[in-house]
Image (cartoon, rainbow, N blue to C red; front, top):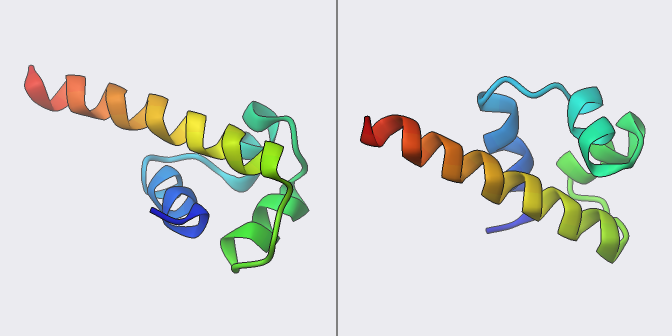
Length: 65
């Protein structure tokens, strides 16, 4: 899964670009650029991936109830 796909998933789950940026220690313009396919730092990419995985896990738990 690409960073763009992860960001789209998080947006569908209700995260704004600013909220994602705050949670991953980045800025909203960086998240915006990443959502459009621009390159980002490895650290930011990994932080987005971690947030995505946490949110996906939470969604999976919700659907199992």
